[in-house]
Image (cartoon, rainbow, N blue to C red; front, side, top):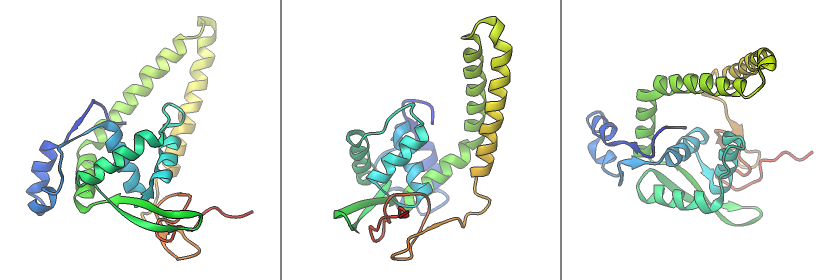
Length: 205
């Protein structure tokens, strides 16, 4: 999760304007994003395109119970990001109801996201390291002294498992896709319905 109440994009937009078409970046209507707005943009980028329903599901999986994404919070942000030029939307058929709206990044939104992450990736990694050390220290000291040695060992094992999972989930190739059996579309990450034809992607057992 990115720090700060707002992520200031002014310097990034200025630098990026000198690297690609200036008129492309000018399509963005705002120069500051909240951490949640930026997280939503990251999530949609990693999935290529998402409906609001699938976005909420992915956000809740990522936040792992520390915060719950709800439609009343997420859908207004999606509308705002679309209006401000970061997202684009299209309507797709749904096999279980009316047309569904799916979102993807605009060219300008994608270029800005990649530029921002490229500049700040290692700083964010260091922040996560410092956060884990401080969180672990507080957790250990929440137990009686006689139990702390055991808790240190438990935390070390938990962190080893966490880092193992991180390494395993970083794709060794950028070619990993989920395939829709009905229309044959390639989809970036797990979603409930194909964003192109609306077919359910749940496998029947």
